Amino acid sequence: MLIVASAQAGVIRPLSIDALAAAPAVVVCRVERVALGPFVPAQKGARPTATRHCTATLRVLRAVPEFPAARIYLSHFCNGPHFAMRNGHPAYPNLEAGRAYVFPLVPHGAQWRLIADEGWGLVVPAIEADPPGARLASKREFIFREITNTLLHGAYADLYRFSSYMQFRYAKELNDEIMAALVAALPPCDPRWLDISAALLATSPRRLSDMAAGGNPHDLFPDAVATLAARTFEEAPEERRREGILRDMLQHSAVHPQASVSVLLPEFKDDPLLLKLLPAYLEQHQDGAVAIACALVAYGKVALEDVTFDAALKVLRDKRAGYADVNGAISLLIHRGSDVQFEGYLAILNDVKVHDRNRYDAMWQPAWEDKSPRILRILAVLLDDPRRTSPWDDVRNCDFAGFLLERFSGEKFGYKPWDKMPLDERNAALKRARAWMKYALNGAH
Image (cartoon, rainbow, N blue to C red; front, side):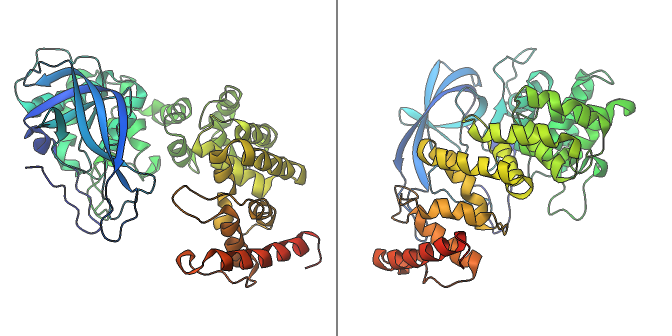
């Protein structure tokens, strides 16, 4: 029987490693590929295409008990295009090809399944390298040793994956055990302490200045991530702590771009070292650097304005640019860009409208909530776009634009909920919205 993760309203309870150890087999595997299968039929009240069947091809690295197969196939659920999480569930593992994990498995015909269909902490991030020492017979010891192996020998990105795994856990569940293992393995003042602390801090809602050992009684759960971040932080030399966190957040901004912004600002906004180091990361086009720079300019750091505006326009043209950099660039250009720079933004918007649908969709998103007068120019582009928003809906981009323009302008064009608005009514409302926009842009409204 599969374990059912707790899904009470508003409550997230990750599976413990004891629960994972109850699986018939605990296997460390590298994900070679994930094949997307058919969609799961929608339950009452859920949108279709929210969940789909997936099959992962896994290369076995080590296991308890010993595993004869070199490659296995895992049947599991994945997020669909209309996936929606409510009260923290469902939480599917969403495996990444090329990553290693600890899998708690049960046989499923010729394939395997996880011990639960969904749940936080259902798989444990791992690394490919074998842990040092003899292999252990206990499944729980096996899982815990994989955790310490990641913390002691994984790359920084692996540390960050571990910090995500620790979210929503009680501090008392694993923290003492982890600290004991780290203290036994790492000498005092080892640089690894700061790397572990920085990766944990990137997942914690607390600021560096707020970190202290122990849980916060105002938290819904005693915060395992923040508490462990504080305890590992205290193992670093006191004189290196603050600078070490700053350098880690910059150096690894590509791993957690939005978290680097959240940790560095506003706490480090006046730190000369941040202002000194950041331009080099902008020149290297490192992911996350533009997001940090845009936030600093928003805080009034005028010395960075020229290089940041230039970098912001380059990011919007770069198909490889990440979400945080793109969002930072969009906000900066809309709210602080000159007329010339905003015209550059609009030129890129019109270009990606044709050549890069994903970037185009991201660039008009501020129209949902932003009240800047410049939103009118963005909506004008969208009003002239008759394409459907997705293959599963008949609502068009121009329909959204008309609806948003009605809300932005305060005028009434006749929009209603989409399910109560057939195409002929949408076309009539769209005609009124386009007429209003024409007069508005010509200065006649």
